[in-house]
Amino acid sequence: MPLQVIDATDSITEMVRFLSSPVYEMMLSLQTLRKPGARAEWAASARAVLPPRLLRELDDLYEPYFNGALFFELAVDYADHDDVPGFIDYIRTMDPVTFMFYCVGRILRREQIAATGLEFDRLREQLMASGYESHWMYTKVPLREMLADVPAFQNRLADLWQWYWEDFFAGQIDSLRPHWEQALEDKAALLARLGGAGLLEHVTGKSELLPPLPEEYPVTDIVFIPVYLMPSSVYMFYGYGNITVLFNSERTEARLAELERNKQQLVSIFKALADGSRLDILHLIMHHGDQMHGKRIANKLNLSASAVSRHLAQLKEAGLIVEETQDNRTFTYKIQENAISTLPDTLFDVLHH
Image 1 (tube, one colour):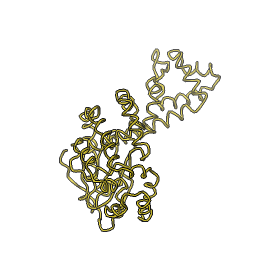
Image 2 (tube, helix red, strand yellow; image 1 turned 120 degrees about the vertical axis):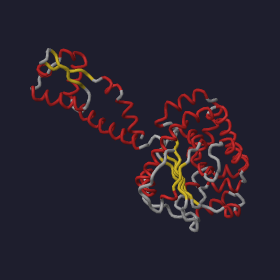
Image 3 (cartoon, helix red, strand yellow; image 1 turned 90 degrees about the vertical axis):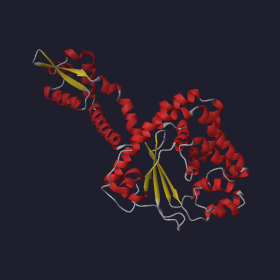
Image 4 (cartoon, rainbow, N blue to C red; image 1 turned 60 degrees about the vertical axis):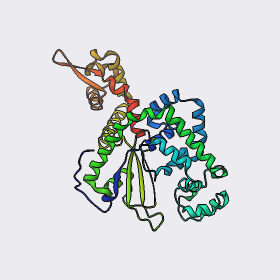
């Protein structure tokens, strides 16, 4: 990453660090396989080559647990995010109490979980009494089935990840690294310009640090991790002095500016299309463009010359037509076919991002 000179500093700036993570990319790509959003093309190509049995196992393991979001915090304290096979072994060999500690969002201490004997009713009671607003989430998933044999569940989850990694996803990583690098450079530049608090608000919408969890662990570490194959814009979770922010690697400043330009262009286009006379004019130009000048359009549609002039001006402003000169004095019109043919994709892109 290029050298960054930090112009804006605050108490949060020194807490910020950046990390690329094949581990989280792998975990979230499985979410995206199930609910692709803007990554529909990638998901379709992946599903075409993955074994149906793997996809069924993915559905069985991810669907009941917030599409796999319950498992995100399992990677928070893992040391080497470039070592995905090591992470899978880490999960496979994790003691059951620690596994459940992460799966319930670290809102209970390990000793509290151990005291429940990993019995569902006792764990549920502890969650309800925890005082954290998010406790309700963990009572909505089938923890009873997980707790029936935690090591077996760990192995089943690790088997799925290992199968997916070895058969498919390890070959995807090199193509994703440039996206991570671009995203991290973008966020480092924002940190230099806005400081830590400004970066946090820009990415998450949160202008202040979350309260400590537990109370005696104030936040000292905020890690930003770009993910390309991500079904949402941002995920954030925290506890024990750490805030982890997973953000969509494509939401760079340049990309957001492009989306804003596209949004404004869509507004202009839809305003131009929201009139029957202008649609009639487009129809005439589409079929007889090189013959259609203002006067002929007015005659064909029984409109005044001034009305046609206004309609043509709005269609030109929206980028739907261009004006051409015939004989150095007569203006005719041509459809901008690219603006119309790409309209569905542009709309889809703006809506998904």
